[in-house]
Length: 269
Image 1 (cartoon, helix red, strand yellow):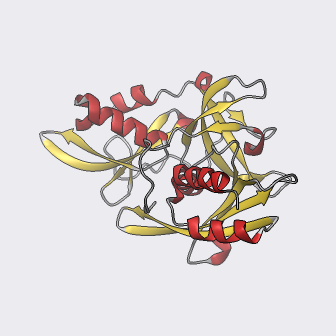
Image 2 (tube, one colour):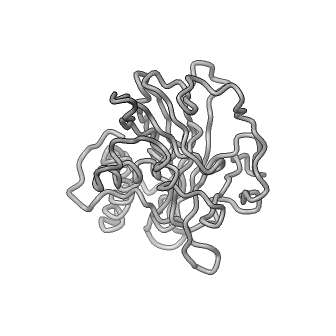
């Protein structure tokens, strides 16, 4: 087994959000000299008072020359009580970078993730990625909608339209924005009429705003419990840039979600 290669793969898995929980199986398969192998993993995520489960299959392959292995992609499946309603997507990894395990869950749960990407000429650009569950690529993967900077979604300005207590503190504001960019549901405090109210926020680049939920995860709209006039199937505006001609496989993604370098240890994603 190529020890240096194994350490590199372990580091990549750690930064992709899998911790060190795949390391034993990784070494076992590398020592066996398998040409290709998959390692399963289950993630558990909190959503309000609920828990969501995601099953992952991480793919590895051996170089045609030498004993080097690569982590190429992983499939993530958001479980559902009704198996037919489970949502799956394959996320490709380029040079060790890509959508993290937590970001994959957020995207399967319908939210958008902000990533730094590289075009075919290796020019960097920022874009929000969101799965389009209504359309599929030829390979069976769902298409990705991409909302570039030019599309006009400004997260900071969208947040400023709401009475969010955390925005008054620069450090807390930065944390709120970073978590929303990762696709997380972010808990914040609304200050209205002298009272503090717990709310949850979701970045919504498609409509250039943020979605607000109350403590019970009910969608809010200008103080109304539920906005009846808003359709989740609302037609996308003409300025939207769709990913129908580009697969995530062809993008070189650089994770904006990597933790600071530190000693590897088991983590729960």
